[in-house]
Image (tube, rainbow, N blue to C red; front, side):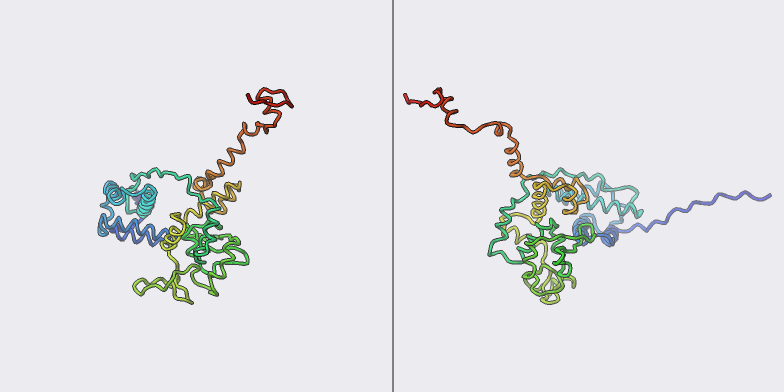
Length: 334
């Protein structure tokens, strides 16, 4: 009589050892599909988190309550849009750690997004933009950047990350790395194309937009951000934003993208084409931009004023009849 076979034991999938908070952050930031801009933003948020909780904290001893308390103390008084950006980062980080088996349940879901006040006046009228980039005292670099951002509806970081070799002037397009890391085309217009030869000044490769001077030895830039001809570094987002705000009286580079999409929407460009131009992946996100401005709404309202369309021009005979005199007669003053 043979012995009955015992049921085989199920093997559980192996889990990575539980790391410290600092190690988990490093693993998250090392994900290969993160765009450079996203990695910088995530590093800022998670760096502050490590300062608040301690990079040596064993990750399995971190509770949702502690995370919420740290977030409140660190970012509790900032603007809603900035708070929401930090919350999105913490949720992504929590989900990553849960998938790795370091968390049994998410610890960032209790962080609620805050309502962001909507400014309906963020689009800049084209006449004001045209006056801005026609000013003689504005440098070619700034004019070229502003025209590029408006004409392509590109994000500022996408434009600043361009290299000279990415631009195909004959085809009026430029190869850019988008927000999610994908390679996409920006389609150029004549305003930027006319400024390009002066901007590159014979350079065949390297960063398209350069800083004013070479970086100091203590702030050496990566090789990909240095011009091989001049040794100057790539123009930073912070400096580009400062220059635009100073020249425009407080506008932001992002308003150029918003204005481009808004003006196209006012010109009755279809939503599918607007999505292709702006490269939004969500119609809901696009609709925040593709909202006609006050001038377009005022014009439409006037054009559809029913009482205005019915009203006829006043003739001399009609005015005489209104005053009580017979047609063709005279009204005598008493």
